[in-house]
Length: 566
Ligand code: AMP
Image 1 (tube, rainbow, N blue to C red):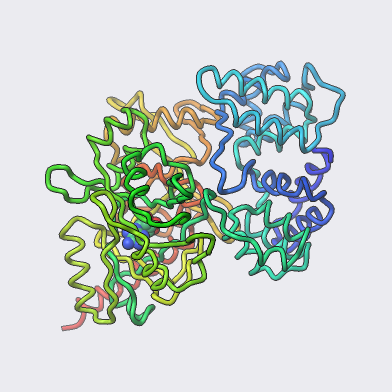
Image 2 (cartoon, rainbow, N blue to C red):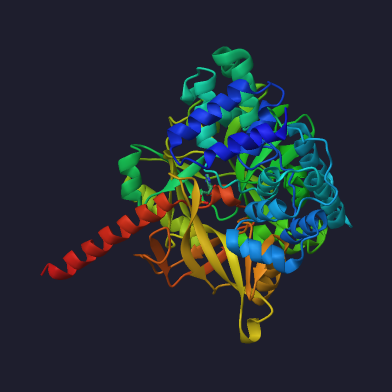
């Protein structure tokens, strides 16, 4: 199948923003696609190359793209910069340049979808010294064969931002429509397989029956179930009558897969982080009494001096490669607190109630100095829960998790079956899309960041303002290096970047603002942490900002009423 036929579909998206119309176009595309290409078409459609469980990445920097573009067309820097300023997007920049400057070495052969996909796979495969040049050469191979409209989408795919509004939700609806399957079955199948391409393939091949047989696959991480925040324990008890309360530990979420004597640990963003925690792997081998299992827990840094938990930034340092792992193991000792069981010896536990999952977890875990089960109390008494909350804060934990004992495990969903209450004020996880060099002492660092949240309705990123305080010199140094790696373009003292770095941002207040397209701005924003454990998919939504704004307005009017009441 020619890549140009996929590009023709992408072009149809540009003439509409209607969700129904987009779903219609996508569903027709799926019906007409050969079954072997369907997964690839789906990944490309949503700006990815690999399924969600697969942690391979293209890792192509803006400068590599520009270098390949220059080589392919002979265009000089000023021409490229001018086109970029006009279009604001790397794909449209290339399209514009291709319209006047055809690729120098244009091949007569037309690109197929497989050619483009294989090129992407080859790019992802390249690592280590000299990889930048090698990636550039493979990309150049694709660009040399592309037409002006093809180059636009190839490059958008490379940076992971297709800009056509077709997101995973639309793809799910389109699969349902194309193959006459209830949309909730498609959604559930995606939660289990964590692979939209596979779901579409099974739907096309064997319909409802096939999808119902989809199973969790060991060593393929699924998206974790997420928690909604509540303001206090009273609110939690109004949502869940008699919940299970657990300490909310301030660490990194870990999904553990065990198969015989093989252990893998995946992060919240389903990245393989096994290498970073050898002592936990060793303890898990001794501590799990089961052939095959998928467990969940939190890896927490422990202060070697007093055995108290340390803030999660310490655990994140274990992810970094600055020191050797064995050195880090000594400087930042960690401990794993287990709290859930998703799979055991060929049986999925996702549909079982939380209490059953927890009870079974307790049966298959032998605790040791590096692995413990979380403390759990089931109660409907506010005073008992409040005491547990105070105790958690005193020890140094974040607050409490509140879980519905009867709820099943719903991957990737932030619902009301798992809640969280924190002592600290709410924070927002936001992505950086642009960064500016600082002044004075900070002139060599990118130290001011433009932030975006996700508008879940439109699937687009919306601006919520800038932040420029909160990072140490060491962190500034590090983030500057990373931002440069993902830079798309430098304009004066600003660098536009791919939205890949997530910052946790604290703030004094949320205000309405006509300045930013979210309609909101943060007052007194400050960076709490660079969230290396989070990716673009995890950032907070505009809907959450609206909810926090509502809550804040309610609290403020409550306070005013209290002042007024004699
Ligand atoms: P947040 O990151 O603020 O959305 O809070 C949810 C996170 O809290 C989860 O993703 C876990 O990493 C973490 N967490 C800490 N303690 C627990 C616990 N006992 N049960 C579930 N999640 C927990």
